[in-house]
Amino acid sequence: MNQITIGVVGSGLMGVGIATQAALHGYPTIVHDIDATRLASVGAKAEAILDELIDAGVFNADGKRDVLARIETTDQLERVATAGFIVEAIPEVLELKNRTYRALEPLLRDDAIFASNTSGFPPDLLAQVLQNKARFVIAHFWNPPHTIPLVEVVPGTATDPDVTRRTAELMTAIGMEPVVLTKAIPGFVGNRLQFAVLREALAIVRSGAATPQVVDAVMKASLGRRYGMVGPLESADLGGLDTLLDIGSHLMPELAKDEDVLQLMREHVQNGRVGVRSGQGFYEWDDAQHARVKAGRKRLIHHTAKKTGKHS
Ligand code: NAD
Image (cartoon, rainbow, N blue to C red):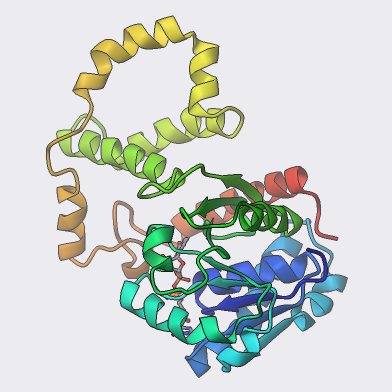
């Protein structure tokens, strides 16, 4: 798939992240949006990502101009449709995605792969409006792609296995760490694990047993570190399945299940505390709090670059 052009539909948070990652790894990239303001800010946003990589010492500033030159922007759907691999990253609204797919499909090249970065719509649901369902696959990136390398590649029931394989290969080629699911389930794998943890974290805070700060400190000093090295099932093997079975037998029934675990989050949202965007959520987002996260991201970028190779 080398020399293939990558098309990105939607130049929001994910679209720019994906396009920058592709351009960083040498791929000509075309980004399309219907919003001229968003489109005009693609270069500056891509540059900010590259600056973060430069600041972390994993990308040479001399290469910045070349990477940015590989990112073309267009307000024309026809232009992005000339790419060999197109990934859709428009808002998670089914009707909008349906409408865009109907307009895009007749313009696509016969040999093009069409992927969606949807967070949760099943591939068969999205493919319903497509004539050619065999070339459609989900490529679920995480935010931000230059820091979190996972891409969940999720085929629908009609997806050609060759499309799935080539998509995973392309993801590796742009420095990502793809996994291929056997079949689609809601939330795929990553978000199911994320929300299982979040459900328990919310229930603990609500029970009064620990503050948000303590819950997060526990995660960062224990599971967060372990999971960077071994996954939960490898970890279970290491701990001993017989031991884990004993613990799980009395602990699993205690975990959050039926109660409305989203209640705590709902209260915050109703009070205008939506997190970073409003400056308050579980935390007060002052300069010190931002600086802590920024320092953590820098460490993570180092670690990711060590695993997937420096960019320059
Ligand atoms: P966003 O709102 O930041 O960006 C969406 C972009 O799509 C906007 O620039 C908008 O102008 C553009 N757009 C809207 N309609 C369009 C159309 N018809 N044609 C072309 N462009 C159009 O959204 P985002 O956070 O980048 O999310 C995009 C997709 O990626 C969603 O499906 C989302 O669920 C998924 N996703 C998001 C994240 C995340 O953390 N934000 C992570 C993984 C996946």
